Amino acid sequence: MSFPLLRKNFSSNAFRTLSAIFVSLAVALLLSACASDPVLPKSDPKLMGTKAGSFDHVLMMPGSGIPAFSNVFIEDPAVSFNKHWLLDFRGDYTDRDLERITSTYGEMLKKALREGMAEQTNVTVVDSAVEADVIYRPLLRELNIYAPDLSMPGRTKKYVYEVGNATFDLTLIQASNDKVIAQFIDHRETSANIGNRLERTDRVTNARYFRMLMERWTRNLTNYLVDTGTLTAK
Image (cartoon, rainbow, N blue to C red; front, top):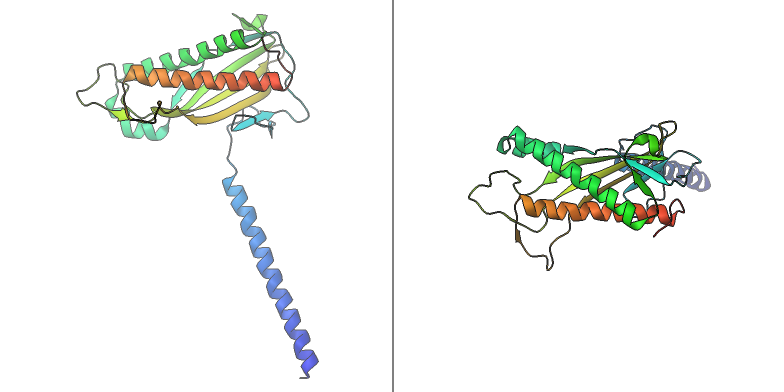
């Protein structure tokens, strides 16, 4: 074999090897991206991601935005627990405890949304869907309370830096035709106390920090709607 032919074969082999490596890396990156892309619980399968602002995800219909509206009706929020929390702590709670928590936290979220919309925007919060331009359908998912939230606290004192986390999941519905307009999703920890010190906690403390988290979600929502021109601020 002549030397020039040897070099030609070597170059061809090297090119094929580099091409194979490149293809393998491209496939690996694609698979990694797919694996890290979260599967979102969309209110409508046609929803697509858009500018998220302070939320983890904001979804809208393709080619559409959120239309301006004057009247909003807020449905009673549904509340569900983190499945790992249920596996670990379900035995510590009575059915009455769980009913109290879901009812209390649902009421807190609805109150935060009502007061935030009324105080921060020019929208009127109405009492029925027939009066509304837009309907808010809020969910509080993956509720995870670190410290006990029992009706009858035990003798052991519990101290935490943060009291828990949850996912805010809000769907906006066009009242006239019941079609989905947009969806806001955000998973967040409650804020730590001042100085990031351990704090003794109970059901009152838990509710206080989760209420602050719900008010933060509401501020982020009103800011988003004002910044995008859907609503006007007071």
